[in-house]
Length: 425
Ligand SMILES: [Zn+2]
Image 1 (cartoon, helix red, strand yellow):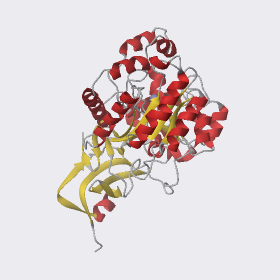
Image 2 (tube, rainbow, N blue to C red):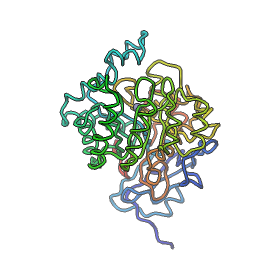
Image 3 (cartoon, rainbow, N blue to C red):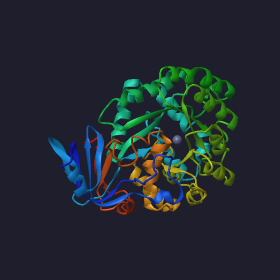
Image 4 (spheres, rainbow, N blue to C red):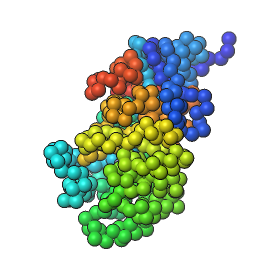
């Protein structure tokens, strides 16, 4: 008899197991038809040892391959569906308080831009953020990340961007770093978004703020290893293409991976800039041009779509996902969880919006929120699919299929979340 692998974790009795595995994975994010390959296994099981997947597939085959150790955690999914833990590749989860007053103002006619120009929006969050202590922000962010985990996000990217000066940007990133070591929270990927907006004190001297970001904030962030990515909000009225190029190129020179808020509302050519700089991702893309789509399609940059924001803003300009898929753009989908334009961290709800408003098949949406999102964060070797040797992060759905999860909007669609081979909620 061949030697059996020792398992300290097993989930069995899975009706439909969506592994998101496909032969050939490992060479890059999925595109086109490949987005529908969810690696479906009927009557499945997943086994792990010390947090790493050691066997996955048909239940009988997994059972034959492993020996379950005494004291192991063993879950019976009772016919429910299982998917990889969601990878939320775009959040602004470190903030003080939300801005619900603006939500109502927008719904009766004010625009996001006019509220921002009158001192609301990101600038209001900055005033609030700067006066809160690091300890208070730590507690607020921890409880939000627990919510993310409860709704199935096992890896979450978190950006700074409400500090907008050296002291407060470092404060935000230290909060993320402190939470990275807590085992009951999602895996965190830290991004410096000091170029989120121009702070009030620099509104009349914008180039000087770009200097501050490039010459002071980013070098300090890199030297303290507080972030692995640099981001910028490139949009008419915020950072111009030239300013965004300076910020991202400076970050890259300091060893950070680049990503960009691009072509969100009006289109500022951010996706072309992302391709020019070899950025890991170009996010939003609601106003992307045809040239922008062609540029992304011919690149390794992942387009990260954030349909929850367009939905929450009450707008109709969803990113042209079908045209991008047809053109061959590697796409991911994420929440954009933040205190203003999208106060929603639920990936299941985001996928319901993505499918209904951008005409995605649920299979495409799943690959975009797992494997391709992991690619956009440089984490595809560790997470994003249920494959041997990856981390055992998965979601037992409160549904028999992925389609049911997507259809059952706002319902209790997550039954249990497993992080690193342990149930965490
Ligand atoms: Zn954002």
